Length: 610
Image (tube, rainbow, N blue to C red; front, side):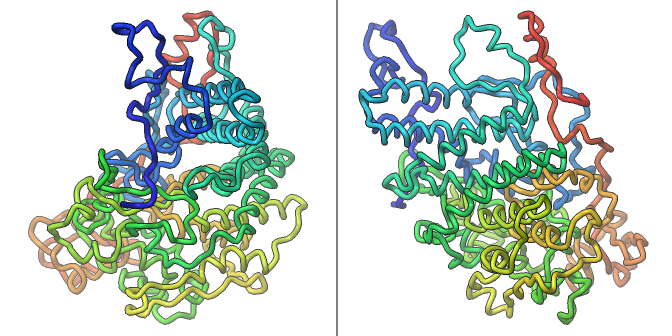
């Protein structure tokens, strides 16, 4: 049996019951609030109920909210056949919930308008406060109040990333407190200052270790704090032009990441692919927090993300040419500046051979019809799983019975959060980034070992980044420095199909990348269909199969021109998403929620632009 499985209550909604229930017998399936809060073990059990909501990993069963590949596919890195996914065009009729069931919005990569988890955190805090100096010691109080404040801050970071201004609640609101229950939205900076206070408390009071390494501790919390403070710090800079707040949040991001990096507990000793396909991450030194899966426990804890990576299952939304071009060549240069042989040949085979090792570890090395762009992501399955194509697959590689562990928080993210925050602070009067900083972050990542499969293919590690000879990519945005451009590129290569890309382009104020004005956003890689993929040269593809030449000419397969079908693959019937404007950085609330406020005599302000 695996070392750790997230511990869940049988009843995850955690209903608090009174004695006035059926036959006046204590409930066996609900918690009695009057006698539950008596010892530290019960605090731990209650806290475990937060884990699957915030440390989602690959989620479970066929559920894919907050899961890589099948959850995070709305970004400028991906394209699909047909019309591209639209941003919403009007405020929804309803967007409210009071459920603890994870509900999220794919096109915002965050939760719906729901404060159930805020209330749960506040309830937890209040119960811990009531136990202080009675059932628990001061040190126990400090740790568990830090745990509760961490989860409250986590939820507010999510809500603010989606809606911007949201009402802030620092305690449980009673049913008769209508003025508080129906308060309007607080300014996001007010909310994030409260979050900042919670996070600083966490860094001062949470235990460095809480027994099992997979229980929430200060290092795990610090990793997430570096994520959220980088997000808000750069949002304040690029979206709100608030240098004071930007520096405040970015400095905390650096401090939190420093704690993790200087602990000596984590290091880059794993090859990239093993981070995602391993059946046991317990000994992986790069993984700070993981979610373990086990089919042998009852009930079984399994997922489906490896199945969607097994070369057989469809990936209708798939990596585009723009993403592929962003990968560095192994000499450390973008392909337009590279001296690597065949660096400018943009077919899958040559790109695998010439690019950063993460390209080979992320994508299959030949065109696949199962992919909407023919470039198939096999990142979330081990090497053995893809060898079984086209099946049959054993449970660990098929259906919703996968058991490979999910990395929830990795050292790579922490060091990239750290180096970006430092680089941003340097633009606002902070200390300049040094070569030692680059070596401790980007170059540490690039020094990862290669696995046997990559070595057998002749894959090479990418050269170290040198501040003295920074690449100046011809494709760089003019308003982004060469250093920040390379830091952003590193994130793009590192986190394909993970949680970061949409959030990154939002906080950088680069949502226009998704307008697809660059044709590369809606193309696959260069393909010679006669030699690489003749299975598409069939009658059923007449009038459908298209390639785009370097000069922009589109060639359509007519059944007789197979030799001409050489170029960038054009996904079938592809068309751009509808136009949008900057209001899509934040989500509207539902009209029903606004009406509910009005019915009670209060006003809920709609998100600007909606």
